[in-house]
Image (cartoon, rainbow, N blue to C red; front, side, top):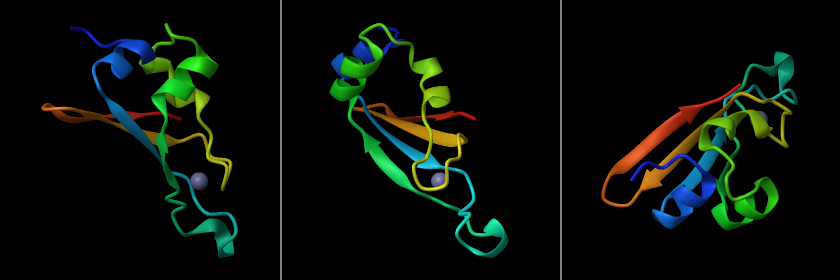
Length: 89
Ligand SMILES: [Zn+2]
């Protein structure tokens, strides 16, 4: 089964987490990696983005609340298949 939308991923039992690739602006010169990460709640994403929302468009919709960076790294964990990473920004 091809997994292309949020609903596809949810039905396939995937879980997703996102990590910020930006710099922490609160440190001097922003030299420290921000590194904020959070688990994405797929059912909530389906409610807010729509059931047919393409996974490929997810990274550009995410923004780190800590540093405001849009460069994010999404990791989908697929049961029995390991994980798949998706880069945004
Ligand atoms: Zn950040």
